[in-house]
Image 1 (cartoon, protein in one colour):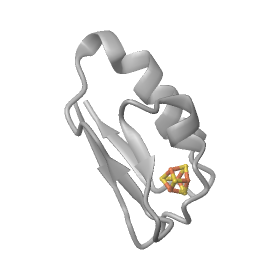
Image 2: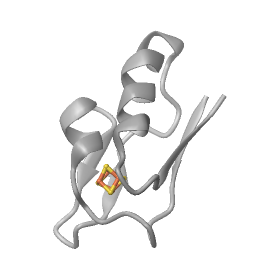
Image 3: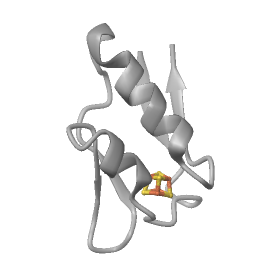
Image 4: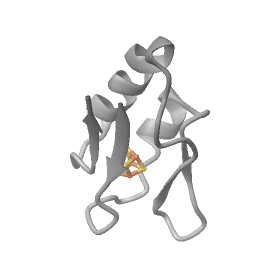
Length: 63
Ligand code: SF4
């Protein structure tokens, strides 16, 4: 399982960070930083919800 982000699409809205702060952090330049690109299976539901929460669909979870 791996998370990827389309930085050109991300608008720094922070939904992902609020739902899974161990995996996403919005930088000062309003672009998300992925803190851990390869989450454990135990964290899948939390990460999946965060990915789904992105209003501009900048995040993808590769299974
Ligand atoms: S929710 Fe989407 S737009 Fe907002 S910071 Fe995360 S990736 Fe970027």
